[in-house]
Amino acid sequence: MNHKKLNRKELSEVFNNAMRGEYNSVADTNNVERHSVATEDFDEFEPYDIDDFSHEALSDGVSPREGTTSYCVDDFHRRRSATQASMGVGSRSAVSEQSSADSRGSKKIGALLLRTANDVIEEGRKKEDPKALYSCFWNEGEIACLFADSNVGKSILSVQIADEITRNLNRKVHYYDFELSEKQFQLRYTDETTGTSHRFSNLLKIAHVSESMISENFENQIIDTIENGAVGDDCSIIIIDNISALNNHLETGEAAGQLMLRLMDLKHRLNLSVLVIAHTPKRDMTQPITQNDLAGSKRLFNFFDSVFSMGKSAVDSGIRYIKQIKSRNGRIIYDTQSVLIGELEKEAAMPKFVATGTVNEYSLLKVADTSSQSVRQDRVAALSGKGKTCREISEELGISKSAVSRILCRLRHQNVSNSNLL
Image (cartoon, rainbow, N blue to C red; front, side, top):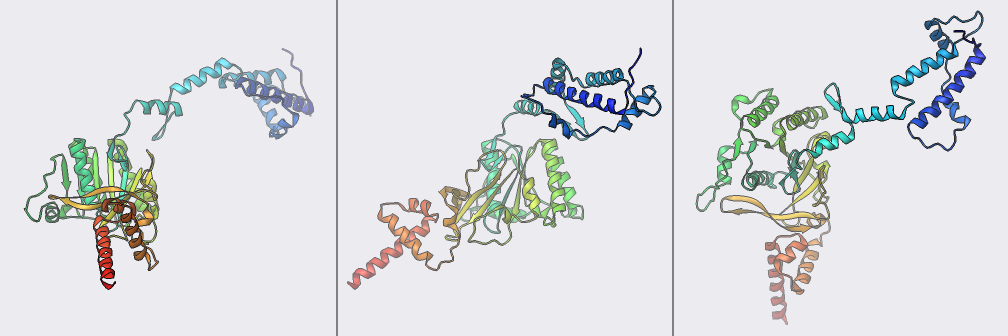
């Protein structure tokens, strides 16, 4: 076949025209709506090095004329057609087939499985929706965190959660207790008057640390123990009280990240649900609880699926409240505007948090104003004058019923004294 040889200027013109045609072809193939294609649209094309183009021509066996850069136009179109065929460009059916194949397949890249978003949704649809383990605070398949200050009642609440799961859901729970000794646990769950202890379900198993396990490799030993225990006892619900016992360097991002990655690995491989108990450093009692009150590195918070906190009222020491801080799988119900309040009560031999209602968290915080006690007293008197009961006043103001009773008693005493003076 006789090929027409082109010089450098002619070849550049052919190439630019070809690129314009290629642009139109690809746009049409992918159903891109184009009203017009202005010439300046192609000004952004990176200029093609004509010497590189000639080098490709030489590799194809086309000999340029001496003193000129030449290339076979037919060869150029042949190479472009081959490229289009390999990419599936130039045919709507080819593009459709390629897209269909991609939607049906998946690709393994190292430790990752790459799939389309639609395939991920379809796979998720095959799995059951997670069940609530503790109201809206902790769901199946989550690594959740409960944090609170010392002596607020977080361990009491966590054991209560474990007890309710075994009784209400008939599920096994492994509770790793790094806080209480056997004797302390026995005393806490024993009625002081009768000496009778609370009877837990046998589905709840408590793990205490053996002295032989305490070593520099303690964290790895515990994680391995959790894994072996979950597999050996067919248990998928784990509570760890508390996380600082596993690693006392959690204020550093690296240590916190490594620990959480190991827990996440267990969660995914064994389909575990994990509740981690944590501390909060000394906090400002005039401010609402936030994620910044969680002790340790801020990276800890990022790893958790759900986070909730237990606080103590600065107005009434008998009141506790629970607040949601984070929830990946659901709506936050108990936020600053509506925290869940209650009291710690011992029913027979079982201490527990008994919820009584919801209030604004600010009503529970410490107020710098010295007249705050007088203001609260006036509010109790006003609500009582409207016929509100002690419980109703307690729920509205976020103070305990006993505190309301004391204020009303004090007010009655003041009224009697004032009457006697008259």
